[in-house]
Image (tube, rainbow, N blue to C red):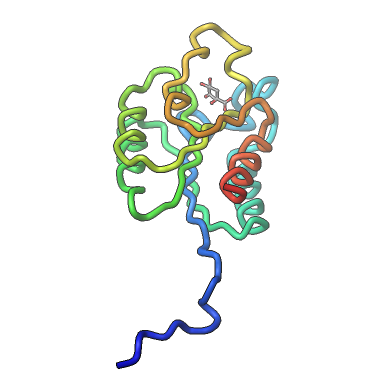
Length: 157
Ligand code: DQA
């Protein structure tokens, strides 16, 4: 009896990483929202930036944005078995959401925390990060490049 043969082209081919990028509340207003802090580039421009990085790094990305904590919890739960990693800018929920922290713990997927700004250099209430309690790495303070750094981190990992 012969064993199953692998197609020669599939042998040793690195698997394409599937990454879920989740953006939290008010990030849809980029470009309009406090441009002195967040810049003038818009949310659709951020999406294009992330897609271009993913293409360069040969990753498959799905990019979502929600203003609703429960929807973000649902997306994290459903990522189990579908995505290899999560890049998460939970925005204000970073500093408040035990529910998002629990969801991340439950699915146990690798997480990179991302912020456009550097929250720790802003108001005191931004110093706590629930996401940071489970994230493998945090990339912050570099605008859109914070997302690039997170995707590059998973590409190297
Ligand atoms: C943010 C920082 C958060 O403190 C803030 O609530 C946001 C955006 C950032 O990307 O810099 O909404 O996550």
